[in-house]
Image 1: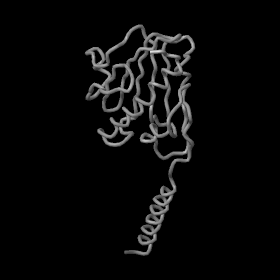
Image 2 (image 1 turned 90 degrees about the vertical axis):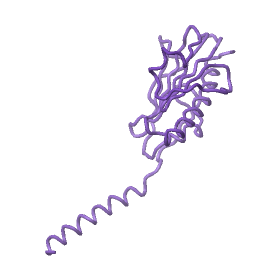
Image 3 (image 1 turned 60 degrees about the vertical axis):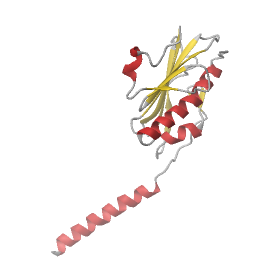
Image 4 (image 1 turned 45 degrees about the vertical axis):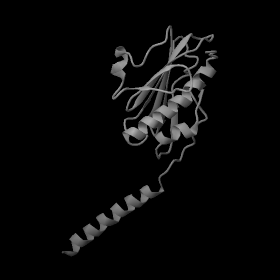
Length: 182
């Protein structure tokens, strides 16, 4: 090996080592908010989807009091990448997420059973949909949709469990913030 080639190889290896060591200090450099778009967020429920990064941002207006709309969307992002999104729709009746008309929303849709509140739910590989009664001042019924970045939250079975846990934590909080009595 010539002296120039050795020097070039050593420089390249040193640069690769420096870059790999720079990644060792990564982690979550951001604080997790206590609420997102008007809804309290439980860090424990959100935690499986959080990734290393510098800045967590919440994008969207209040899903509880959307100005002039019957729906509100919220996105939680880390360094600009979508981690979790949820949407709340104020609707006129209870919609069944297992109805054929809702099939397009899911990959590998399954009925959510044993919801700890009255409602109908479905779970897919990267999303959920729960329809519940509200009987509140803002609406009689609502639908809460949750979706995550395709690979966030672990392997498919684990991600589905995490989406379900996040959804089950979120829906009662949405109902409380809307003043639902049902």
